[in-house]
Length: 112
Image (cartoon, rainbow, N blue to C red; front, side, top):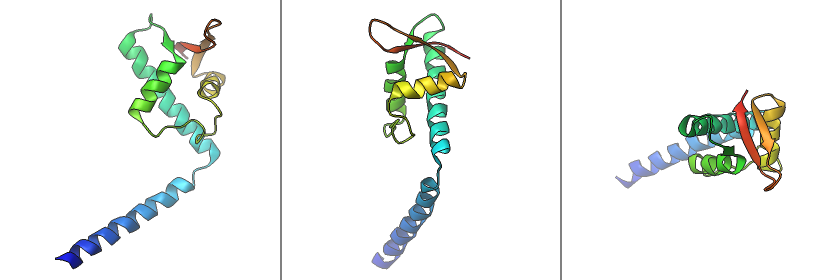
């Protein structure tokens, strides 16, 4: 009985190794696009939940994203800060940002 469980374990490990190689082959652009997709999904969900009239702060987006995907890290995706990630989304005309002078944080005005 022990032998059969050992062979199962080795099969699982080898399957994990195969999928791990695919993740390592991601380019910087792929990583950035993945981050932008995650951010857009999160922003859309927040707008749907809160309504268009309510403010959606960049910090709220990051907190929600970290709850949905606890291992998320903007640095892994090629951005120094979460704000830089939001700025990239605005440059790609995905969202409209408003800088709050008092706090220095971003408010997402709308989806483009």
